[in-house]
Length: 111
Image (cartoon, rainbow, N blue to C red):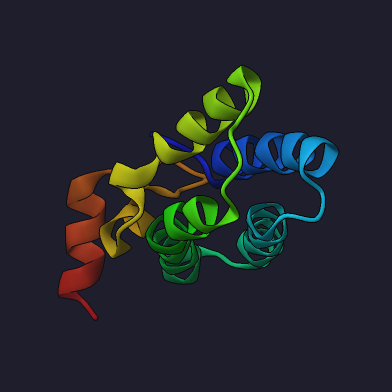
């Protein structure tokens, strides 16, 4: 399972690299704002924010018309490796404590 912290740390590394190399770019500004939004959100709000980032960031990057360094490309790819997780079902995987499927089903049944 992937933790929220793991995603946020990957975004922080990307943010730092872009702030150093392309501080005035729309891409850097968008990554910075998305990082702020991600750190303030949890659960479904977190996955929704992450999905919005995955939807918007490539277009913003293309419109900036600059090339990533090798390091920036690796950081970008690392962040986008979480794309498969950026749907609302992923919130179920952001547990800080163990929770078994049977326990979850029992809790849902009693709601």
